[in-house]
Length: 166
Image: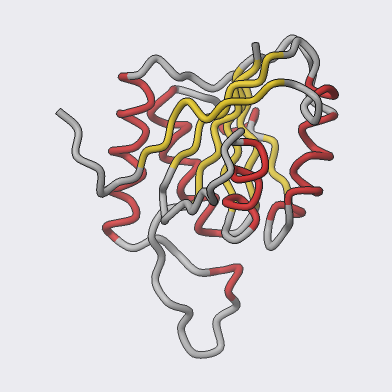
């Protein structure tokens, strides 16, 4: 059994005049939401064995908060420039290449691509729409990442910063 934890970056500031979209930074709420969502994942016992992340500034900041919460070494993060403004095919190429000894992978990226991937892999017919810092967890009944397309898949987690937790 494999688990993919798909996470959209946290809330950002709008681009300042002349600023590239790639360089947008998290808001105060973004930092707070990322910390809260990391704690929810920890409480659920969902711990990354590998983290793949976009290199855009807002994704970098989000993943740094997650890595800190899990004591995951920053140097072990697989930074993926191709995860910025990509579609499910680019994510899937990276997933196919994963080492089969790894069971739980976190992917931090952007909409629309991350939501499209969640929809494609969720095993449901309805569209999965991840808000900022939203998380979709998908189980894959396989021992090999290369078999992701044919594996039975199920959405086991959908959580957002605005959902109430007791």
